[in-house]
Image (tube, rainbow, N blue to C red; front, side, top):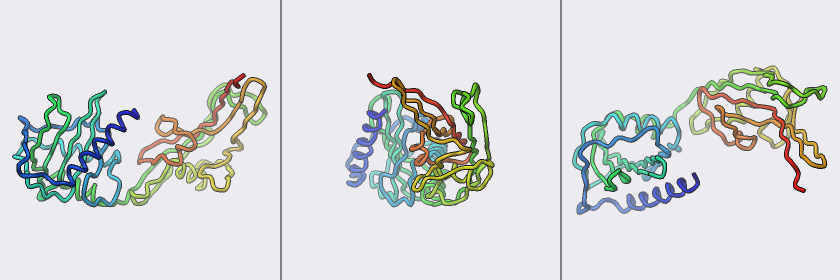
Length: 279
């Protein structure tokens, strides 16, 4: 994954450098037989290549809106070699070891230059499209900071294998509290999982008591349970809260950086781990 990410960054850098130089009227233009769609399932990145964008556009919402609108195109026109675009966007797709780059340049009046590098036959294709839906995505999505409203579900679970208040080991997971958290704000200030967890506790929606530690994004204890470490001669036994966003473990540190979206589910789970000490 790191290798693919590094390659993608190199490709973006190269494209950005090319767009800074501008297109010369004498460049060779290879036109495809027809419109080349973007495979929505393989989109890895959507980035600004040039032009002023007021926000980060590499989000799930922007990627989805951009690709859906772009793919409504059908006919192609001759590539405008006198490209005077106001904004350029790079779309990266990855499929296994294969990568493709789509450079989409906004010419105005619903017209866009498109350059596709990484096609099946290895040829770099250039063409122009007319697409009012894509023009609307630029004006309403990519170039506008919107106010959003989220509903995020939060639940707190004491896991099987952790001790109860009397030290008895639980034989099954026990959900101790849950609630929906409502959030409203600008998309440039979207909340993290940690912020939503704190809101769930502070607003009293879960009915759970908690304690805080100064300077920390996440609570120190919830329902009387917090970090607990016991070191034996052979193992390190640890009970702690871990954080799961839509089924993916993000850990405590990840919760402070993981940005949530409407409809997400955050599970704060008190778990036990046993690690053998190195002899």
